[in-house]
Length: 319
Image (cartoon, rainbow, N blue to C red; front, side, top):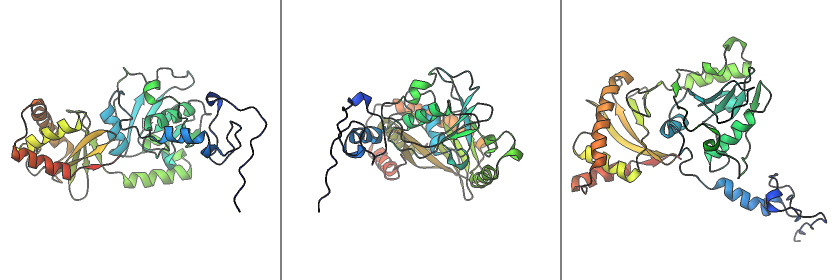
């Protein structure tokens, strides 16, 4: 037997601008008698799931935002808000928080905002802004739970001071979670131990922007988030690769790239004995070669096209 359609109630219907977000299976607040997901929830769901290709575009340090989201295990950045409440002494972006909390308001009133959490919409910037706004108002000592951000809510670009610097500090572990590890709860202490054991040693290069060296058991790597348009960057990398100048020194190799949040991230294999300090000078020299290659307007040669095809075939998309 077919199910009966719920009958509309006699209460007056709300206008679109007055309809709040409710659970998908709850009656729609507009008074239609249908569930929210089958009524006004359709448009809301579409709005929050539509993918924003470059969620950090327009923010200072877009490339570092992407690196901290996708590459760096443990790092923090002090954030400057356009309007920070007086009772919140500081706001800090962190790659990961204990128990994968989206955010935490510490006992002293300061806020930690987690970057590497799963989000429910296609706009990471809006999700983070919603979490941040809620973290500013919860009582001290309270974590912030995940939720679906309102489709018309602000984005990070609306909340952060666009002129403030974005200066990541990379850590060897996650001790920044708690000022005093001895006073941490058993759950936080266990989460801290697990996170430290899994963290890959990572160092941010100081001579070029958004390049991160990391150490793995077999070999080391350099992963470099670049702001250039993808097609232009791939052409430039192909020119260098065909000319034999895409490496960062003896024993190194440009192995490909991946896309992350709308930008391209070239990756180099490095010898296991090559430290972050060792790669500083070769990376700076490569940056100069890349600048020249990016400026070239000449069509790619046959050899350069083959090099580009090889780079493209090894490209993957993370987000």
